[in-house]
Length: 169
Length: 334
Image (tube, rainbow over all chains, first blue to last red):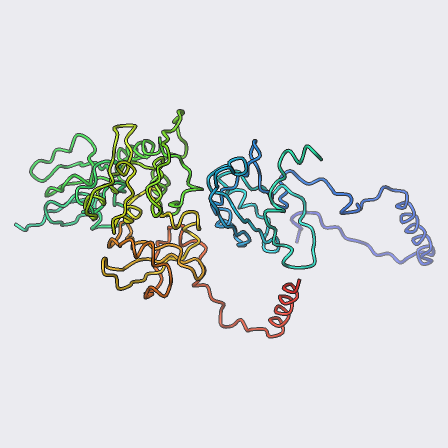
């Protein structure tokens, strides 16, 4: 029967000649390729000292954002925790007191905000659910650690540094 | 001739007693064809006719006078006639009018749902989600009020109020002395306790339950948790002043809020007293009846996996459990 795609190739297996039976030319050919690679630029990088560029839609570690005046945007509405398919997010809300207007944008804020990075699957649904544009997954890869409890990231690790501290650096 | 009148709502016929409103006739049928209501409250006499969300089209007035009504009518205030034909969701005119009403209601609403404690069980949120437009066309500053403190139990957010007058009817009808009303006119109208007199009546807490938005919320529950992370449980107690039938809202082992039981139209079954609502927040105070049934469409029932049980074919692995325990102990040490 005629083949449909006509891409079939029949290989002929001839008996090897003398040089081929010696194997030495093939060995030298292979060694030459190996030797040539020693002078080529390296494909590997030394992570974590060197990092590759991330793609634009890369989702890494979360950060809780501040607004233009340096106040925390998060109001602890709980929509990120509700949307989270891995149930990695917990928070406790508190009421803003007088004199804290420069710290928190609205009358309610997150007193504690914790993300369990072992549970998190970096799907970005929290980012999508957030009505206040307070959480973004724009950080680096979450670093490795030894203990499970150290993967529960609180506000100390998640909240963006205030602008004044960034200028100092 | 029977003493019942026949009314057809969206093609579904029902026989109701004369004098019933269109809204109540629709509620007797139930389902999708029930017009939404923000101000009408079946337990409060005289309520309704203010918010205009329950507008319907009467395409046939009655058997004797089959002319349609010239304008859309508020179904909570219009009584049925024999042979009346009503169009609710089948009429594009009604759907469009309702979208306009939602836009009007939201003109001065601050849309601070992420902060508001009512979010998740708010009638205006549901209404806006089902009937409203996604964008606002309003360009001016929203009406704002000075914060008024009306006692340590009830929190008033006048900015969120849609002036449904339900709370003033509660103050009039459920409580003895009226000390809570609407002052001002038009854009300046606001609910208020006269001369900031705190409401200390036994049943004043019911204004929280009847409020369709977050204008009146429970101060003892303020910012404690989001409604959808709490677990509603029916319970009762022997209360000398009220029926004592309530819903407890649990977070873990703790009762963080007590409300009256609400039906599918967000109306309470029975009003409860302030002692039950604010002071009895221990499980030992109550006789637990069982979990409260919450509609599947409600955000409160999301992420609840109580019914999810592992299949019996999945065996327990003692070696795996031991190693998990060991790992857990190891993390606890430091």
